[in-house]
Image (cartoon, rainbow, N blue to C red; front, side):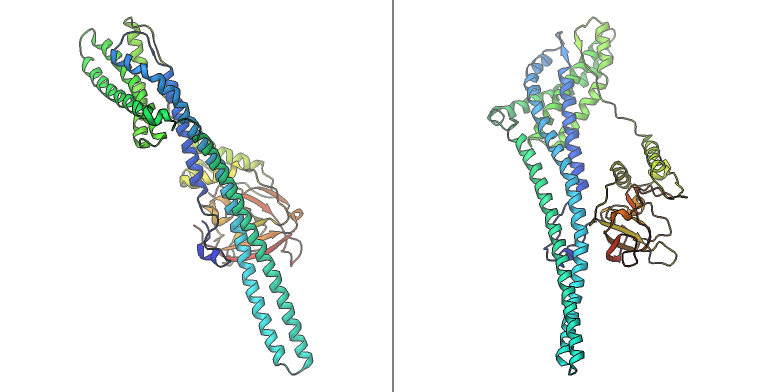
Length: 472
């Protein structure tokens, strides 16, 4: 969850400078790529159908125009593939820019508070110095005022640096957005889908072919049911009509897909026609065998329909992958790894499950001096404390289910968040994906820093911000 607009206004921004939802962008890219694959599959089916016999004059007339449709279907495919690839590439850049800007926001907010406090102290000590009659005491107050002024300058420098990091994140996001826009514009301005042939007569022709194909498919399908009951020849006639239905349905689906790609028809219409074509093609193999048996040779078709992959073992495979990664991860002596079960993964929301698997699919980044880390801990006695050793680069407020992603124990209420800066990466003893724990699958980046913070010596981390936190 992104910080509220009020938090950005506190440090001088009108609102969130890096808005947007990377997950929605990534899902949109995946949808565009899926459309591209659907177009390729439809074209492959059309190219694989040949009718050498005189099955019907309607099909003959229909196939005279399908070559023109097939020759231009690749243009729509290229357009949607380019858009899908551009959005897929843009999503992680947006996510990183949001992570960086949010981390900088917390540093800036802390620095602004420190600056306000230091300025207030400076004014206070200056007032005391001006009204002090004892020269020694007046000098002491003056020195304290100067020290407070220096603290204010340091805080302002930190605030300026944090704002610069936010501006860099915005610039990185903007550059990635420009690349995505350029990629999409490059293909859409040269793919020919809006060339004069299309505007002048191509669109109208394709609409007529598509509508005729839809009518032919509907009539042929009904006739196939009717003639199937005619003795002797009924089965052969029904088989021939089923072939006509399948061919017409595929042509109708391709036409609606191209028209939807150019904005001349809705995607709802295209999707319905694609489903209809897939259903029509299911029985075409049996129909062709009937025609072959009856002497109707020369009909050749490719694979009829794509079967939806079974998804029943998704959670078993995911649990096995997570458990293997966890067993292979570096651990402190005495650490027990609790395997996550398929049932525990299945109980998660789909978006939370996808988030965990995305985290596990990413390599744990190396740490550098100045990097920002986060730790969730409990304000309640007996729970996890601020001085614990486990930290992550994954901002909790950017995750849908931080408890699951961090593998937090039940005793950690996670109602506090400490934000730290890495001063000495060499103090880190190990890094890995967070291990599963009592139902929480883990998966986020995890870095172990034992010892105390810098003011206690040995941890290699400095506290930037410590505030209350509310789990989603």
